[in-house]
Image (tube, rainbow, N blue to C red):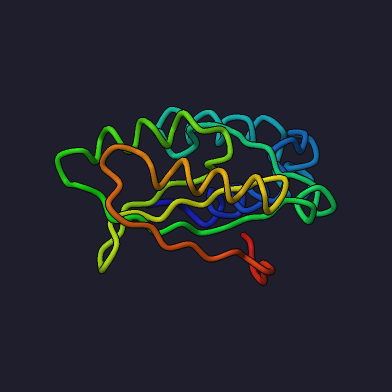
Length: 142
């Protein structure tokens, strides 16, 4: 379980993982040493496992993003995961319950590129069925 102080630190890091220790300390009202110590503990506990990149909204607006729902052959699910992992436009892969087995979130520079990508995914060994939806806008992104 995380303390309130750790949750506050994680919230600031989610907003800007590149914030300096001094900036984080100022916003949290603690010393830089305290912030550094908390970050190290969170990393050692495996709560923070890495840091990522957030793309500028102007750049992302130029991309075509889609959710691709997949039904896969159970025995070939690992092969499908490896094949999807090898595709750079695949941003996220979730296993889910319900009528589909996986949801893939992809980014493509154009509709034409998205169409090609969807054909690639549909042709993968182990993929039985796909259904895709283009994301028109993102209302909340934390």
